[in-house]
Length: 271
Image (cartoon, rainbow, N blue to C red; front, side, top):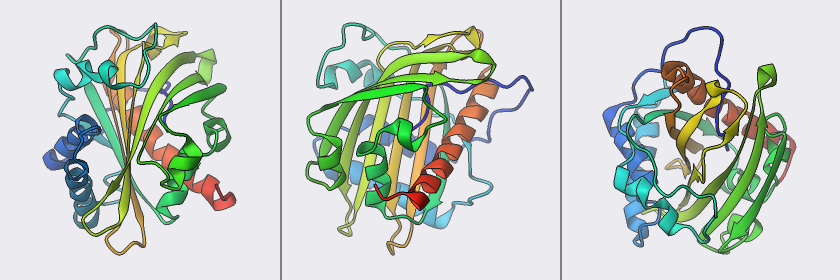
């Protein structure tokens, strides 16, 4: 889980280093192919992601990336057609021009099912108490408890978020989430999750303005089952007043930090 926008620093910082081309493309592929009726289509992307973690991932050097490959205009334009309900405030068209992206990879040692359960079977203001001032969600198609134990393959929810940042800045909005269990070729299971802002969030400062935002979150088991690879990516079209390099750098850091928070919560709790 990641807050819709991160606070912009008063100090200048550069964008994170560019992601490897193959990893950049896999991230966009997994977001765009999330609902493909053939689960093997999604499994191919998740297995490529696992291969990258097992052959090229450096937990220090690779903690944050800038994504150069944007999401396709057709893919993001079709998002509202795929949701399980129609929100009266949903955008009629989505922006893709000027899209920037950031990503983060982490490795965890808790069971993959525990990571998923912490995100879908537990309220997120409990798992991430410093992220949300208020929070709520409504399940669609299934419910979080059932999905967590693989009682259903797909799950959707609309999620209301009020995030408080430093300097009295706030962002209030609503995101739509889609989760999917995917069986890999070796019989193990991975989880693919994407969300997007249903409408531009209401922000207290132009420094937090986001026109459109899209998020990918995956959990993939290592080949020997001893570790869980988490890959997160965020693509956004920022407002004119937002310094993009700073926003991408802090977005990557926020995703990395959210994984540390999740592991810390699991260290103390059994979802």
